[in-house]
Length: 127
Length: 405
Image 1 (cartoon, chains in turn green, brown):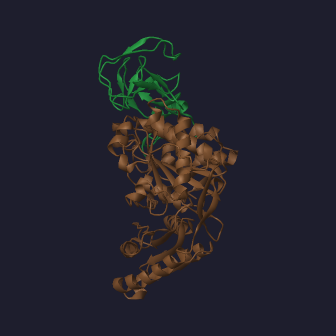
Image 2 (tube, chains in turn blue, red):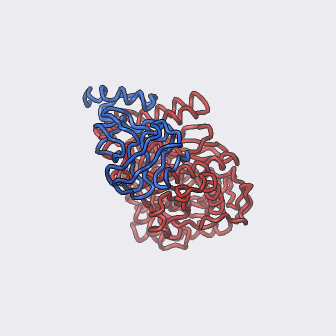
Image 3 (cartoon, one colour):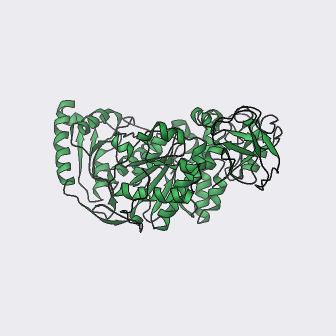
């Protein structure tokens, strides 16, 4: 896993990802031009809507509530509310799709199907 | 600090202590192993009062743990004595433990190394036990002094890959570099092992695709499923504890994200086996997994009990932990942590973030594994960081899910 650095200030781990990771403390208003990288999200520019700390993530495209977040070309969670392009992506607007109390999702599932099953399973109540 | 050292053989050889059972140690430690918490203070004092390289594996396990939990503790205690880094072992008990110290000693003696036991009540109390224990330690150290390093091959190494205090750089820089070194070790014929099963959740499908056989695949997925069920069983919401608050500060949002970064430590070769916590790891085994809890100190102790001679430990946020029996190589992918805590770090993998290839940093790390196997001290050893802990299986889990082995 090597990732694609953009502007030496952020890294996108795989072309299909919907988030980038800050490689420095980034200020609000910082702009990243995505053209020429071949990212699935497109060739647009991303302007940070708030400061992003080193190691934290920001959205490369609008992510709707309930949509899955992709990093490493894998599912890393689900948006708990709408996330705008350039917005900080973290625990305040994303949650895990796995290992919830009372969750019976099968360990053999991949992230995607667990993401689809988990909300229903989670409402089945704690034993 | 991580410049390639031309003196180190790139073919993958080192000089170690060949034990009677043929396995090779990279250190020549006399281990003082308490059988329960009630013997830990005596064990610690015996090690502190002795010469360097006498090390206590103090822990908190109770006098009489329930059966399933007891089996696991026995496995770890015996495994520590059997680890090839150990030249000789002294098992210290109060005398009322549910675990039989003589049985542990007999198990270790099968490797051909000297083993002694000390029972605090039989000796007549703490002072008398310390006197008798000091004599036993001296006999064991005298024998250990006879050991000499001799030529050994990387294929004789079992290297434990661990992460603790992870942040976003762990999955981006440090763990991929460790995975690259793991691939090199496996290529050389050695064994690389990762553990912490809860940190496979959300990434198990990638490991499953790498399993060498269907049997290994089933074992892996069962182990992950069991750990995931524990979250519900214990009424614990992983979303508060995994990732930990520290992980979250470091940018990790969910267990899936943490796991996808964590499994990078295992490189890219086929997954050849799943080994129960603390059980013997195979020599020449390729890439394997130990089914362990997600607490790093217990996880490292389990792998060392399984026979790992060297530990490679990545930390984004700056973990300082070591191990009493095996050298722990600290790797960080976070440039700020490296600057701030250089004294606790061995390898700066943050070079990956500034454009150096994972392959180049992995090659440096592989060389470092061999030089540490040769005797070079790690930061954790210089600071005498010697944390040790045994995983205790909660009674509720035993009752609901049965013995994990």
